[in-house]
Image (cartoon, helix red, strand yellow):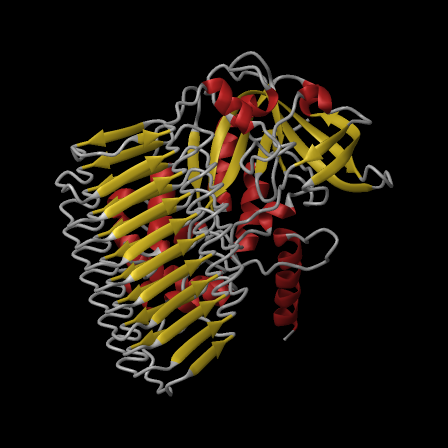
Length: 625
């Protein structure tokens, strides 16, 4: 009995001493959890006794000891077992996963209103309904990962109206699928998407065989995917073989960042009908749109593009076999592609078999366009723009340009001195909150493009889903060849990050980040400033998040830098509100001449140093003072 009590006391002491305590919290850590293992690994690999970086260690997996053992065993097996329990695994391990939506067998009446719904499967819903309407109002509001499937929705209905108003607002990484939506609809129904997916981070929306073979069906997309960040829209066989269908895209994907839209077989063999793209992709940053076999073999269709991709930054549009072989169709492009950063537009087999009755007009059209196999009877091009570099640069720095370099994103080293008032950019982390996987689990998962299919199966990610694209993009970036003088590695555990940083800098190192986000998007006053390593030129390892199911950081060595810590004060009260970390790149000779830093600060590669703050949840490693 006495021996058991002694062993228990030793065990409890071991829990506190080995795992350590989180400063300012007093919470002891169970020694058999992933977090405790990370703490022990830090003690083993880092030679100094400086305070531990809890902002990093608290990103360790939250799995408890029992869960850690369970999922480690599943990951070590054939991984099918782990896939079968992916939802519980994602929940327990704090991962980014989309919910699996089960088939809905619910019965609904003719008129239905859905409010405050999320993550539902509307399969065969509203089929063959005569008249009536369905309203989705404020649907999936503030849902972090809304996933909804509308399969064969309103198929074969007569005069049925569907209204999606303020659908999935403020969501983060949404995935919506409309498959055979409104197929065969008759008697002039209306499908309205109003303020659909606004303020969303990384949307993925798929419309497959949407309104195919519809009769007189009108679709309206208003303020669709407005103010979104890095998403994709896919319209496949949209309004194909439709009769007299009209589609309006108003304020579609405006003010979006790196949005991509693909229209495949859109309006193919359509009889009459018309499509209007009004203010489509305006003020967007690097939009990419592809129209493939658009209006192919149509009968008298009309297409209107007004203010399309107007005032966007760069961007790329491809029209392949667009309105090819139509019968007396019309296509009108007005104020198309008035980008301040030169984009590119390709028209391949565009109206190549037009007749005398066909009309194609371009009015106030932008620069950098190629017309391949373009129709012979082409109307005049009115006011075709050929902007010079000076005009583009002038527009880029203009006050009314949404995509100008954010004030304070880059600054000169001389700004880091007491008393300086300067703008601070938005340093808030916009990515979903996730945790690292334990190294023993992460090392068992197939983390490479050669085995990407296996990884997608584990996380239930279809190739055309947002999850699938997210995995593709992250792995491609991780396997990209390093830049000149760069050493890089993607890490999926705290232990991997420690190993990479010590391999570059040695074991006497420290990691820093900006303390919080206070001062973001406003003016700040610089207080006391400290140069790391005495303000001497050194090298560091910087780590940035990747969008992935579990926490993955892209870490790379950064030679010839100076790193600073600075107190950030409120410029009015002079009170300290933040403690920032800034890095100044002394050698910019290998940077591109169009880098945003030079757009903001002037000059060019190798001529000036460039500084920036370390954003929330990013970090930089240096040799300890």
